[in-house]
Length: 247
Image 1 (tube, rainbow, N blue to C red):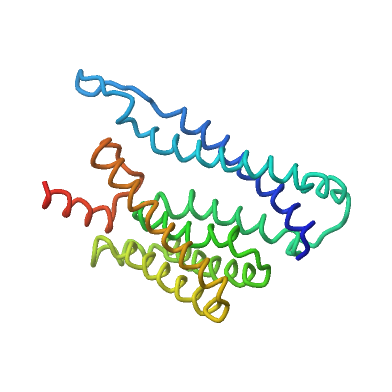
Image 2 (image 1 turned 180 degrees about the vertical axis):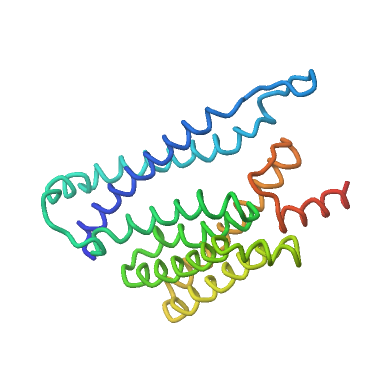
């Protein structure tokens, strides 16, 4: 994949991130920043809109930064010059765009409403970060295919109501399945990068970021700002236990 194609992909990605952040902001502002419960008015910093608001702002900042970079590097020009060309849907020019779109769809519509928020986030990040960081199209294709297959399995479990059956045996069974998918996917990435020193180093950094981001944000929002997370399951419950043990 040439530099022109990568710069063009950066431009497309930046536009996608900006559109997604705008949509997220619109949906977030539909949530009440202040409300009254039992005659007591809550303050803005415990609003359920606060967390998605911060996330959407971060995404928009990243999108703007990438958009400016793509313009300076000529990515926007390359995109406009080739906009009339006929490209295959799964060509090298489109694969990163498709991967990001799928990751966002799975994260927002599949994982967040049904799986522990911490697990949903690390499952999203362990795929989303390498898309930008590795910059190797063949590896990106492999990871995208594996990630999609795993999420299709999750969709099948939820559609067939197997999730209800599993949860009847153990409340957090689906969280365990999603966590297992994360571990398997992590091992799969390692198998594909272990022989490349540069990719191996990048993967270790990606994994540290993947785990540290929700490990910091979830406790801060849940226990200090008292903001309910979208789905509180296995890992959030462990955090509850640790929090009350320390307290």
